[in-house]
Length: 251
Length: 194
Image 1 (cartoon, chains in turn purple, blue):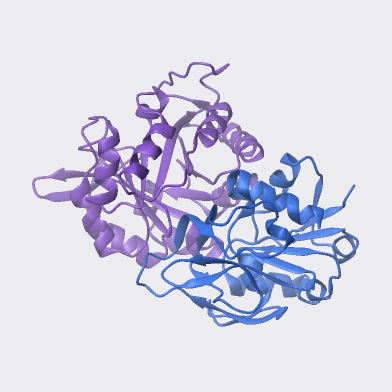
Image 2 (spheres, rainbow over the protein chains, first blue to last red; image 1 turned 120 degrees about the vertical axis):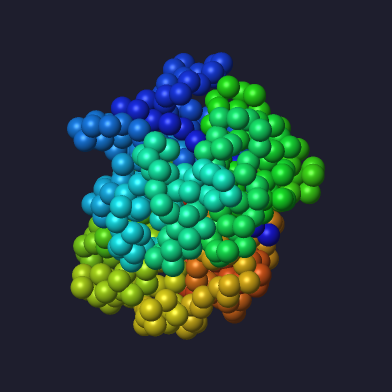
């Protein structure tokens, strides 16, 4: 049986991990390659690298990082941030990335999803969506949550899947940073409305939150950053505990 | 030292496979040159993407005639495995026909694509030497090869299907050994040792 997946997320700027990591025993906590290697050894099922580098020239640093990660790490990883063309994706996949995630650029030009799925296959196209519950409607936001759109989360995700997205990475802005748990109602509805894997993001604070998102939220994978970076939750403990609760895990 | 060639026809995750081989301490050449491929001790045929465009690339580069004639051990991975079959439902594509079996799509009972870690069992053959039954490997695919007489590993995703197949010198696995942690590395190592 297919397992649920635990996915640490690393924010990358100019080829370095940002947003703070608090790892003891790493020679250099800012080095994404070393952190990725450590997470993979601790049992992470996949990794996500989110590049927040603003300038085009610095993207070269990202490509070099992707290649170094691919050389060293023997589990799959996704790269996202600033991807807006077939050429961008081609370079990242050739450097060794397994999947790419697209977000704002797909909203601006939905045809990009079709183009990438046709060229590289749906399995490597992750549609990342940031959304916020306003009143009783989940609204899609862009540019790291700074720009509101008219799009409804569920409509947009359905359209994205129809166009060829092979996986959805949904971040709830209401939950992100709260450590109060994932947005399980919206996640469950996504799982019921589209037939591709859903990655839950935003809100992880305790092991119970992961249990809840896999059971109540029907999520296929759960992504988190700070609880792993700051060692509030050890991946080994998390996976053991989830398995003990009857959730299928790769141990 | 064994000469390992990874077929690079522009539709694969060649670097990931190359890095995996290098982590084991071997060297691998990525090439689409028929002579280089034929002279290899071991050939790896990776693939990520869509069947019809990948077949088109193989035909354009004349590799559709080279691959079925290879005599040394060949390992197809993921789409590479599917392309070694007779036909794929993915855009109704005629493939290399090394294995006289057809590739079909998962029904929508479960989520498609299957993405993540699943177990392999009913392991046969040297390829899985030292690998325990029900070990986890990484899958990402929407099409699959049903259980058949060439199966050397099975996996269950709503349906029991072939996780790996073998015929003569041709080996193929649906999962990604290059991304399957230590288990995957052992499988690549076993292939190189064949």
